[in-house]
Image 1: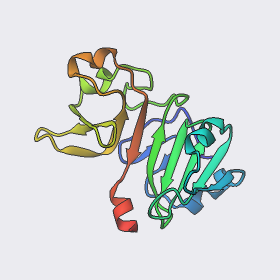
Image 2 (image 1 turned 180 degrees about the vertical axis):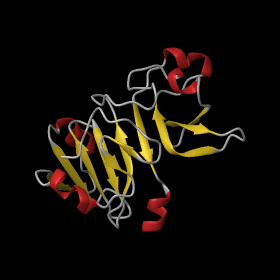
Image 3 (image 1 turned 180 degrees about the horizontal axis):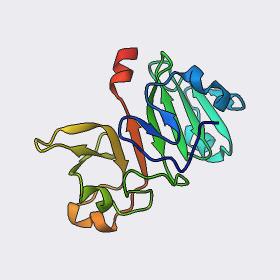
Length: 171
């Protein structure tokens, strides 16, 4: 099985032992025992995820027809495009890998003291930004929106390793 809860996080490349841009079929063995559910209007996604103790595959939730795979009660989530490319890896509580020195539960300042961050209220995540204030692709940090002075007391809840352009190419 590819999943590795201790694997390092590399922006735009990898987390949890999975690689951005990989094909769904490359991980078929990891999902062989998954409970497969088709999303429908009124489906209680939150309840299904919280009750998950193994591997859960949700089909039909993504607008592009892709699937989402959940390991445990939202410890790791993989989002595949409609063409089967892994475009996004989310990791939350239970994941012990790190982005540099930053781990889940560590203060947000673990990242923000090294790389400038900007909060995106539409995505509810922080993105790394360059000197012009433009987002740097590949990584988002999941934490509460707070003023920079509070980064040292604000815990990181998760990370999102991604290549958003794969979703656009799959459309």
